Image (cartoon, rainbow, N blue to C red; front, side, top):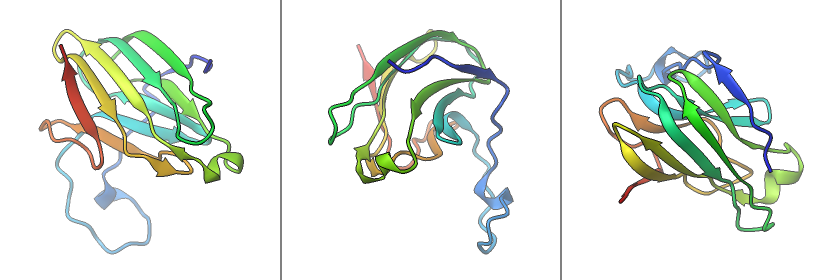
Length: 145
């Protein structure tokens, strides 16, 4: 089982047009992520950038290759709180196809399931949901009744 870890106010999302990455200027990003995945070294965090406390954040980090599935849950995830959802080995995980499945429950959004796109070597920084209710790239989002 994955070690539980919570971080408060540790991740600030920086729009792509504000990053110094050597690429030509980009179109300004006016959207702000409500939910996103942030990286910190070899650890991945789900960031609650909404204004509400989430009743539940559950993660299933199964993958196609190893059968090494891990499941963990967090209750009462506060606004601007990040919870650890995965950790990667920068060498050994490079050959595996990985994706993350999240279940989020809140009073405003109800119960939803989110599935990231599968990616060889692991998932990087990913916007899940924008403040205008648009989904991030390669995100599947489904309400669970």
